[in-house]
Image 1 (tube, rainbow, N blue to C red):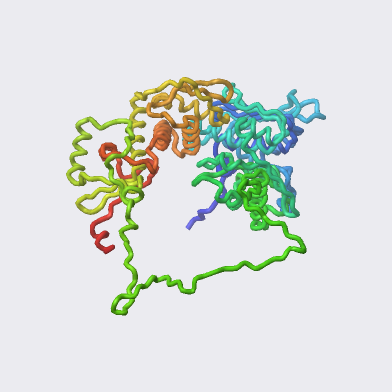
Image 2 (image 1 turned 90 degrees about the vertical axis):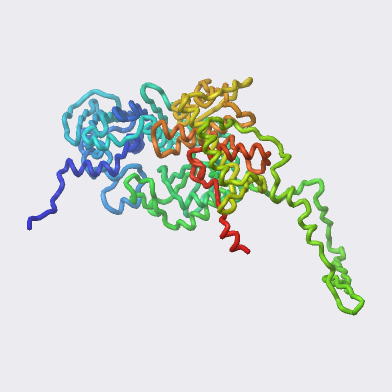
Amino acid sequence: MSDVIHLLPDSVANQIAAGEVIQRPASVVKELVENSLDAGATTIQIIIKDAGRTFIQVIDNGKGMSETDARMSFERHATSKIKKADDLFSLNTMGFRGEALASIAAVAQVELRSKQAENELGVLLEISGSTLEKQSAINCANGSMFSVKNLFFNIPARRKFLKTNSTELNHIITEFNRIAIINPSISFSLIHNDNAIFQLSESNLRQRITAIFGKNINQQLLPIETSTSLINISGFVGKPESAKKQMHNQYFFVNGRYMRHPYFHKAVMKAFDRMLSPETSPSYFISFTIDPANIDVNIHPTKTEIKFDNEQAIWSIIMATVREALGKFNIVPGIDFDQANATEMPLINSTTKIELPRTTFNPEYNPFNQHKLNNGESKKENFNWEKLYEGFESEKGIVSIENQSNLPFSEGVNNSKEQEEITKINDTVCADFFQYRAKYILTTVKSGLMLIDQRRAHERILYEQHLQHIRTQKGISHQLLFPELLELSTEDCLLLEEITADLSFVGFDIDCFGKNTYRINGIPANFEGINAVKVIEDMLAANRERTNSGKTAIHENIALSLAKALAIPYGKTLSREEINQLINQLFSCENHNYTPDGKIIINLLTSEELEKRF
């Protein structure tokens, strides 16, 4: 039998290695910018076209490379950061594997221009698919300029799986933010298709966060800082009222490197215990400074997962530090000693005589209230149990649906197909509905008792209505007398521009009002009393977190956000007509069993289950 194991050619091995490091255009930006940081650059410019598909250029004013170093930098495992294995435990630089440039050159066409300040001429390298095509001396500025063209040109399957330009651009901005936030002393610029997305000058950490995420975030930041023999912690956490449902603006950094750490995230959440609304999460920008010997950054190709020694001790320090910051700025509830009706504390001195408190009781008291009958027998006093239920039906029990306040619904059900569906339902559903605790609608069916969550039912109805408006482009807009202003981060501005046309289909009228600021001129019908700014922010957050690309996913997120904002709240009593209309519209929906985000709407308690309870 012939041998089956053989060594891969270098070209194939390089492409496989590139897959671990270069996953998308954002990976190229990350690796090149980190190299610029290691080169001591104070100004870094990033220029991209078509979200990095066709062109990525990173220009820095770092120390540059000699001709020999420039050529060696594109070899696999070639690095200036480590010389022996022990050096892995004393890393103070960003890149150290020596795979980044080799991986980029394996899947793209790369041009490097680099010059050291002490040399008169620089060096030019052109590499395509790991093959050196040109090397020569040139006259160029001090520092380095990397140009990456036609990413994945030799791996069509990989290029095919790239997402839309907007999605890939968002990934680039995410990587850019992770680097720019923790390096406020360095000037950055990011230009996409000749449009300047970021122009960040030298600043401090707070100014850098504000420059990236908008000035509104500034008033929400609480500084944190602590120094211990194990670790130093600094940065900012957001106030509880600024917490969002989506995990956004959450950054950990260790020794100037971005990282993800779910265990430390739980420490921050524990510090906010009982101060956040359900299902919300605070923003934070927390930087750790620790001895490199106590961490291992070499456990993942992207170096975003880092292992710490003494993680439990650090967990406690993080929680205490954040908790202290919240308490220092009066976020944590405390005792108010200045209340007008506070109990007055008596003054006590050495001559004050202190007496023990006295208590009195009735020794004749009988808790069972027994009375003697004529025959000498004792009998407990009859208790009127019916008093317990007085007012129960009208206040907190099963609420009758008659004589309740009106709550108009957005649309009726008129077409014949829907009426036919309703007729089928009426054959099996009892005509009497009851509203229980202003949350559930109860009715009897042939097989038992049906329970309907009124808010979830309305969410499903509104979701399908708004989805239909988007598809038919027939949304109705109500113009505002006083337009509202919406200030967004750069990342959210790009998302808003992508969905502005779709928002107009449901009734929003939005236009640009300056840098990162938009004006809401009109809102959808039946939107009175709803915070339009918050609804749009929720839409952007939902689109930011979406896993699927394309217009369908965008439309669904818009419809879902509107449905959640406009659905009737729990605690709202409904009239008989409103309940009938709600039930009719629900059973006319394409899917009346579940909400758009998968929560159950209808539950059935069968007759058998009811009988078992008795």
